[in-house]
Image (cartoon, rainbow, N blue to C red; front, side, top):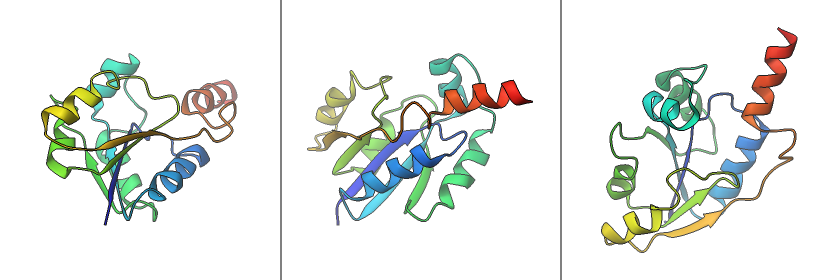
Length: 139
């Protein structure tokens, strides 16, 4: 059974995320979703997520398409790859952080993991940053 791994903040889960889970799951039998740690999210995005890492993990754990949800490592974002040894890493269409060194980390771990880019799902509508801005306007 192939293991597919995806990464994300998953702060406000929306149809775009569900599309991403479904598309990633089509690459293999087991889907592992790695939920970003609060400190790493703040470092990448410049602000903390609305929901803390335990809340976001709980939410993702309860999505039927996801077979296993785990928190990423606090210090080394690639460590989870070494631990679970995925056959495929599925990246969101707009994921840019940590991607440059991903292939190097996979090689360092002695893995033959394939990296694929997922397609967007109504990218102008279902994007967490756009949803947050909309919520801020109406509240």
